[in-house]
Length: 350
Image (cartoon, rainbow, N blue to C red; front, side):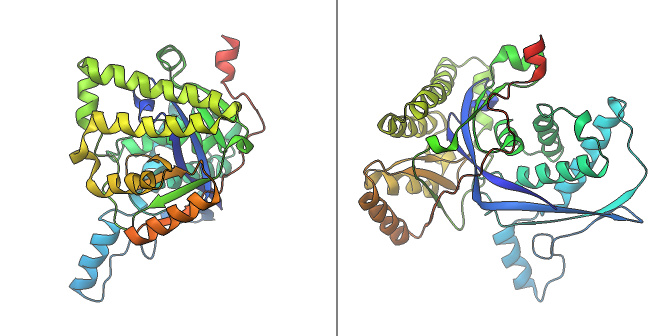
């Protein structure tokens, strides 16, 4: 069984799809697991809740759709298998003829910008690497793109950030500069010590807005060379660069300022209608007690930092409860790799 954790975008999102920079961290609060077992036939096993197709009544069906949506995780497992097989065939990587059954489970809240879909795909991909014994034949820096390709098969709009974070683990600074992306197909990634982080808090809603739909109009404006969008995305990317310095120097007052600025820029670019009133309220609940806050991804959840310490945390907790939001202290996942600097070997050897 392979586990993959939820991801928080601390700074720089959504610049990862605009040749930008981001800082992200994996959290132990939520995760997805995938289990692969050898079997006579290849089977993709539906989840008893997320892939439910039998109901006690039509009301049960409607309630399930309203809370879980139309799509479960089976499609993610199938798409991952397809992308994995296609890549191996293209690269001449031999796969043995054994079959397997795949099943999954997850407790990552839906549509919270915590990378629930990519966590399932990432865990599935790792299972396939181990089952076919090809982990040493598919370079680690290539894996996030293959994971993203599996999601693109299903029309999921996303960038590399989440997949890179979940492949490498821990606290990660990512530079998706155009030169590296065009030359190598991936960015430059640097692992940071998780002890550099101050206490962070995760705020999320039970019925959040859809994550991933807010990118479309802005992306087209960026492609069209819209000066406001281009310059704003560059500033968002620079926030991650400044944030890396702030973390290394443990300048948490600066970190708070950068987090707030990140959200303000996103709000100006996308507009309140695209972000959604519920998502904006989560940010503002934190700000009303003096906490810094921003989206963890595209909406549905917020990461908050209380620069004034425990008394402010109490105020934030009370404010969230009154507003009907859940709040948890963030538990960071240690790095999944041993390297401190994990820029690709291809970059180093070029």
